[in-house]
Image (tube, rainbow, N blue to C red; front, side, top):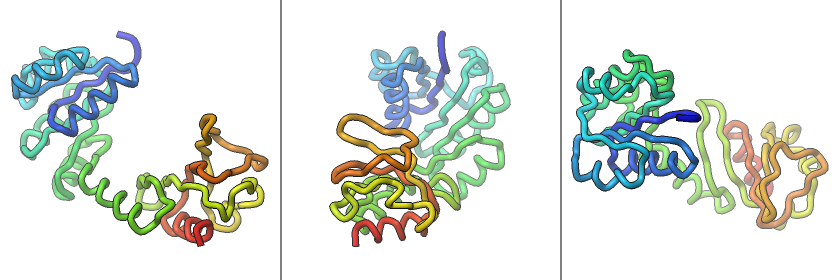
Length: 220
């Protein structure tokens, strides 16, 4: 199997969505769930699917879970099963373990047992929707850490035709434009001479405060 191999444990709405997208991106995915009906539904979509209890160490060993580059623990509403599965895949040597958390407390436990990345789908989506509601030209918002955020801002008529040198976002606001999504394609790591035009989308990185200041300046 070439490239990274992924195992997705729990094929509910979140898990199946992650698994399908990984397949779309060209990776091979093993889907694991205790529900036979769900596994049957996904069998024609994923590379491999299996009906199995991911809280059983021997079962995970028999599936060769240690050979996977990444395991996504996406178990829905059973916190105990989620934690147990995460502990087992870590102990069995999976290099990168990502887990869905249902609450802050659940997330803290996952962090304590060494999960590499913890995702809060409902909380994160709520934050993104709230930011989009209060900022009309903010298209998307992802918190990278406690300090930094990456945001997609639509270019307004106020700055249309300006170069990045003229915008001078780093000096004026402290944030940086790391990409520009234009109709003809995406400009990665744009230069000072690159221009932004109305309906372009700027990908901006900075602190929440810096991005908010920039967003208010370009839409005011």
